[in-house]
Image (tube, rainbow, N blue to C red; front, side, top):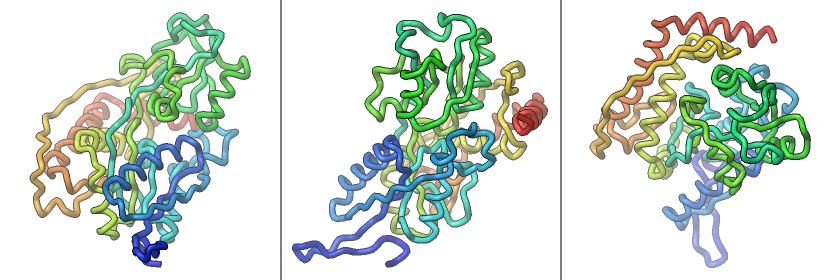
Length: 340
C-alpha cells in the first residue's frame, strides 16, 4: 500500500486507483463527504473512492461543553491520525472545525464553494412564528458555542443561554421532545445539507451574531507531500471562498496567538471593527507560489498576490482590534472559562 492511494483490479481487468476518504460517522459528516466524493467522481471517473468513517473526541464526549474539553482538535484528531498512518488518503472536514495551524505534514488541499455561512434559529414547535425578539423573557436558548452565546447575550439580554451538545439529529431531538429549550442555534449550512431547511425560523445576520471562521465551507485535508493527491483535489477549490476563508483564518490565528475571542463571556464587553481590501482573482500563478501555504491552506490555483492580500486583511483587522484593547477581553474570557 503506497502513501498516496492504492490500486485495485476490477472484474473486467481494468486497473483503477483507490482513494480512501476519511470522515466522521455523523449523518451530516457522511452527507458532506458523499458530496465531495460525488464531485471527485465526476472529475475522475476512473478513480475508485472508499469512505472510512470514524468517531472523534468531540463525538464521544457529549456531557461537557466544547470549550471545557481542553482539546483544540476535537473533531479532527482521529481523522488526522488515520491520515498520518496512511489509513486514509484525504479527509473531509467542516472548515470551521480545523485549527488555524495544522499539524506538521498536513495541508488543506481544497476549500469548496461555501454554503450559507450564517447561524440559524430553530424554534421549539410550540414557539412557531416567534423570533428571538418576541420569545418570552427568560426563554432558554440552547447552543454549544461560546461565540454564539457571547454575541447573543449582548444582543438579546432578556434571554438565557445554556449548553446543548450532540450532533444535529440529537440536538433537534432534545429541542422537540423536551421543554428544556425554547429554541436552539445551529449553522444554517448543516441544516440545509441535511434537507432540514424548513426548520429554519430565522437567519441571524452579522448585527445579531457574526458567524464562525470558515463556517459553511467544506475543506479537504491531505498529506502535504502527496503532490499527486494535492493536485487532484485542488480542482475543487472555489477561489472566492478560498480568499474569504484565508482572511477569516488569518484574523483568528492572529487573535488566538493571544488566545480567545473578542467578546467577554457575558457579552458585556465587545470590540468590533471592519476592514476591507480589494483582491484581483486571476489565474496567473507565479512559480514561487507553488509550495506556499496560507493559514494551513495550499491553493496553487489562486494567484499568490490575492492569497497574500486575503491573509494580510485578516491579520490587519486582528491587529486593529488588539490595539483597541482586545487582549484584555481575551485574557479575561479565557480565565473565566477555565474557572467554570
